[in-house]
Image 1 (cartoon, helix red, strand yellow):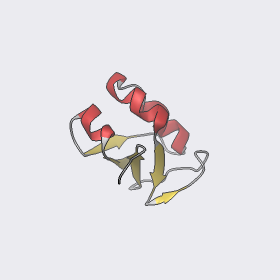
Image 2 (cartoon, one colour; image 1 turned 120 degrees about the vertical axis):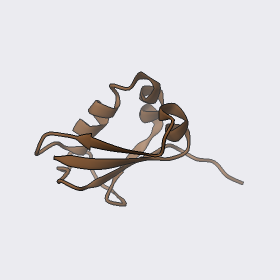
Image 3 (tube, one colour; image 1 turned 120 degrees about the horizontal axis):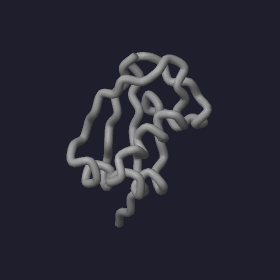
Length: 80
């Protein structure tokens, strides 16, 4: 099945683009998506500090991801 991944802030800098489409196994959890994303060495450091959102909501990483879902990689941000 396919899902979309959106990157923000430092995650965009790490991968060089804002969006991806991934082919993943049925029944994958958000934690499983994180593990797949960690295969990109440039993204690993950012992922250690980032939260993942599923369909624009923060959920437990044991949540199952369904076909067509959107996963967002949201690094910590600072502003002022």
